[in-house]
Length: 152
Image 1: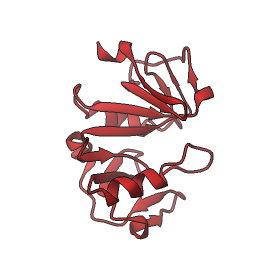
Image 2: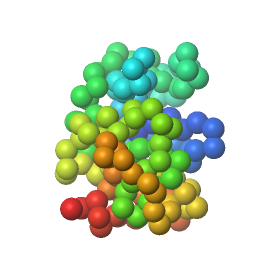
Image 3: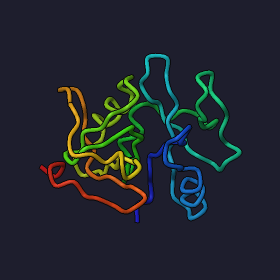
Image 4: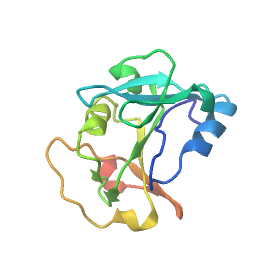
């Protein structure tokens, strides 16, 4: 029922998000996608369909719409987060740049943050650093998993 979703364009072997982005956009949801800044922080811009994406110098598909600022993610009802793995406490293994940890630090506690991984990437435990921001749920091909530890 979310009307505003911050998401990402999947790449490589990540679970696919392009069909989901298109479906959300077609149903009238406001979809925000990240634009990677030189310091590895994330700016956000609206998704206006598949033709609104271009390849960035780093090889990522990013929206061509005007940037909304790093704080735009705070307005989302739901935030979909890429990960190489997520554990049962919501700790996620990312690409190592800290981009999503910074973005998640801006999101309030009532906003649902969801790690998107394959079933075998939803693991019992991962190492975590103090700056790591957990997600509150995980979605895999086999289903949605609310994380109890993330509710505290």
